[in-house]
Image 1 (tube, rainbow, N blue to C red):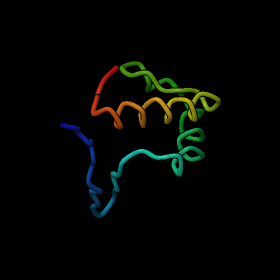
Image 2: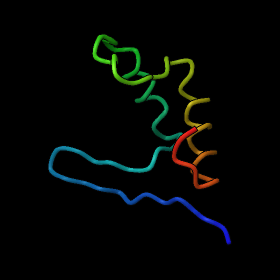
Image 3: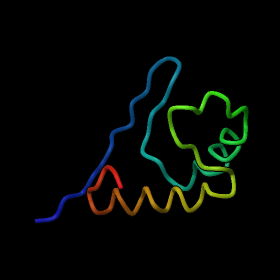
Image 4: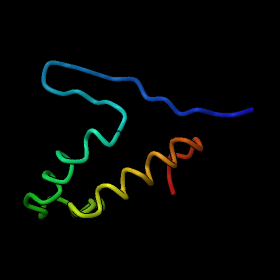
Length: 68
């Protein structure tokens, strides 16, 4: 039996949540390099780490794993 993790797209008036993909890399890299003072409670990749971060998350999703 195999498991495929699929997330729905959730969209409201002010926000859209969708599964992470490489199409988000440029915007994620830009956001990651903004003021990092608010990142005290989570790890956020640096711009140069975004591509490998996305690859790692997609690999986890492919195996059905939510955490490392």
